[in-house]
Length: 429
Ligand code: UGA
Image (cartoon, rainbow, N blue to C red):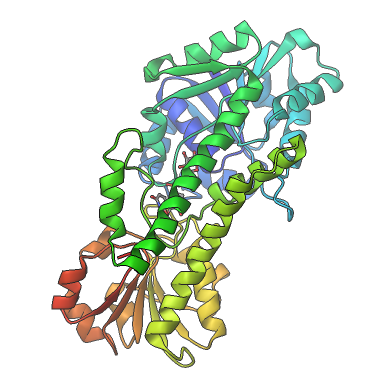
């Protein structure tokens, strides 16, 4: 099929590339000329494992194109995906102005029947607003359908998640649109949940909110574990093996971050409020998340005591491993708070340091783990990158001023750390 993807961020670019890999002809559009130029030069604007290789392959096989020209891409497309950003407004509402602008742009170029698909996470009823916008621009109702097909891929494992989804959700109010999307996703051999558009929109917000709730739940349990001398890792295992609970997303830590959970939870609270429901459960999920970062800061202060003039080594900056994404990363809040107290920050991240300089102008960025640990009064683990697991503990201890590890991701065995002479502090154990 001929596909246009409007918006070439994490979701748009991965979706477009994977759909090209499935044999479709895909044009990824973005209004950021620089980004399109980077892609057309064979480079990548983001770091996502395996994506660069897949882009290269599909570009060379002439199934994947990049352009700033919506008009041409829409004209020849059978399906157009809207994958632009829906950033949070100060009150937590999703800002849908990019979606509206794109709908107007798409409307200008519709000549043959197309399905316009919402891929971005949007509040319930956005589909109807997109349809109305296109219709108000003078396009006849027979020439298009709107569908909602929310994306569930995670950064860091985006290609795998796209190619092997647990389920695909297709919300459509017309048989024609439903069939088009069914045909598109046939090669993935995944269960498809067909719903109306509003239901599909709610599924996305409900899914992300539920996952965030699971994380806040285990973070709350981690506090109880600390207060009662239990071990949260073992509690999570003991709970998670019950299939009704499931072991995923029960990792206690420094709170969820990223471009999705914080934004989607607050957007869902706002959506519920507008509809007349006070979603107090989700408000508490947000509160627990905020408190978890604050609690971690307290742990640092209690361990290091006076922060003024102390050198703190930070291992891991991205909001999760295998990405360079720093949006809503707990590291930013933690580092800024420590700097406010007068601490000197040395940081190392395997992928995110290029971007980090703009977020953290006062931190010193190091070439590797050991350079980062050199002269440190304490080390913090803020992202669970695999390579941190392989740290040579003897060498690490030699580099540090004082052998203190405060681990926000429970990466190490407590006994082993103690045996190696570290004062090791972690979460909920
Ligand atoms: C999330 C969802 O998992 C995807 O299904 C969804 O498609 C995506 O949002 C989106 O809406 O676009 P993502 O934000 O990429 O994906 O990353 P996650 O792996 O979900 O992690 C989010 C945050 O939760 C990270 O800060 C991570 O460290 C934290 N987390 C995750 C925990 O603290 N504990 C866990 O057990 C799991």
